[in-house]
Image (cartoon, rainbow, N blue to C red):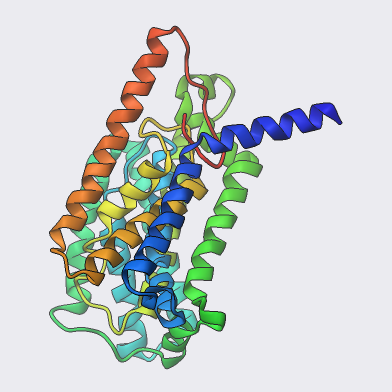
Length: 340
């Protein structure tokens, strides 16, 4: 009994000192402050519904980038892949009369296949993932323009639109879908052997290979899973937006990196922070909502988020250097905070 109590106290103490706890406090304080500043209108049901509806996509794209980061890779094609997939779904429904379920399934499957091909290409050619995903991004931007041109595709399934607007108890279904994706990913990364292999391959590739884990296979799996999540984000965006065009996904890249980095994920790989990434997406959505509430210049949002990301990276580097000077090597973290 004493051992169990000591363990619980240690877990709570560690959580209270984690990045996740800090982000949770920022979310609560920020939300209440915004509610007070808006004279209570932000706390009303319609405002809450709108806030959560457009939070689903940032959560999922942050998770998609987090999966790539956990094996030490970068996925610069997140926005382009999401935009291409959304336009593909819209064209299938509006121009070819494909049922919504089939169009969404086709779009998600196509995105997943592109991720698989990207991972295989990185492993086969030994070209840095940064370069490969940069090339993939360029190709997909062209494909997205080819699909949509200069028009906005808005004549797709009414059932999908209704799903995007559905919000029982003012909690949008698209937001619940994003949380469900986060919960499933957390279970996969924390509780399954394939998830542990991803973390092992990203944390120490040499030790992973000596243990019989194929690091090449984990890179392919990471890019495939990352693309699957991007496909889900594209489906959520298509359901939420009044229409899709070539601008969809154009502003996804920075948030996709900001959420996991602020949430506590190491750029060097070997760690994940699902809850931290979700809370960081909340923080960025609060910043964007504050900008809209007070009619601030939109450029300040990207400036502030970029500043926070740089500060987080620099702070993590200083902390790592401090530990190295003390002769201690930070252990890999797979806790909710995810801070190595």
